[in-house]
Image (tube, rainbow, N blue to C red):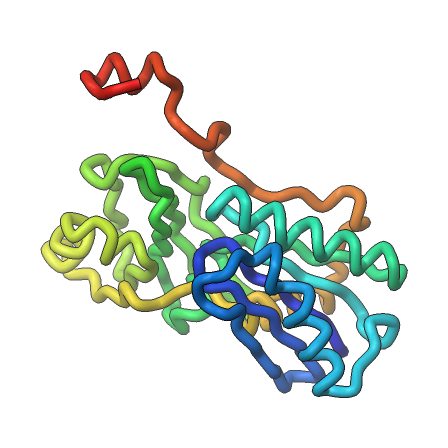
Length: 228
């Protein structure tokens, strides 16, 4: 099995080539937009490995939630490459990726959603990948619902909002704030999905935003006493 994985849901962009359990990963240069760096990075990775797009079995991408622009970049590039090479696409949730990367049996994955909010989801690890225990959430740190299950909390929301890290420790939850979604982990989950036939037509692939708007409206900001 050979597949290409893309992950640009955060400032740390990457792509990875999965070949029968072996993975080569490369990261986008810091300080440059993913839209500028992702395609050249992909071309260099495939050239380094001596693999053509048409030799792949699928193209996977980090579907979200995450930075809206980054999600659109990964989805758009995956769609374009997949259509050109007549390949299926494998969308992989960003929080799923974090949960898988943690290696924990039970994981509370949390990403900074900006605007004072957090994306979160509780997952359990299984032979077929990870499974969400309930819906993904978008909330302010003060309203985080802490699980009763023994788990590990991971993701950059823990460093963006110190209150989360403090409360996690108070609840007896071990934290890994440094863990970020990587294309190599997207590839590992995508390989399991591909083996199970969980793929989609490139035209049907869409980002998972969770939040239905990018920025607060002027009315919301004014109602909070802020400036428009």
